[in-house]
Length: 155
Image (cartoon, rainbow, N blue to C red; front, side, top):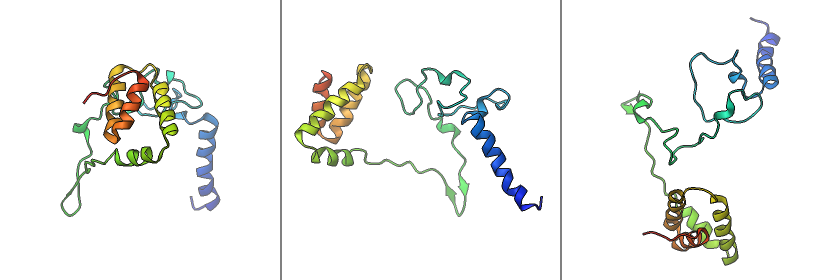
């Protein structure tokens, strides 16, 4: 339509409907796609499908849920040669060590205790993996978390 006011209103109509129905408007059966769609989105108004229950909502995880399907990757984009995703292997521990090093002994102790409390009922193999990651950042960090969890640092 050449009507500029109508063109502007077309956006607001959809926005108003989504606001009224909530962020999960696409899960209401009449609005749901015929093909099943899987996503990480959870919670919010108008959640009508059980909210994925106790399913883990992140990846990677230790329970083989939401596994990345590398064989289903996007095809390369030919520009001036092939372009594909770049496997980035970041340094995940230097910044953690720098923060840990500027903490006082009291702050470090609070960190150990908070970590142990937050890990609560997590399985031991996950706790051990976290201790290993903390040790990679700083051996003192790993030892403190292990002690707070009542576990040992494995080398």
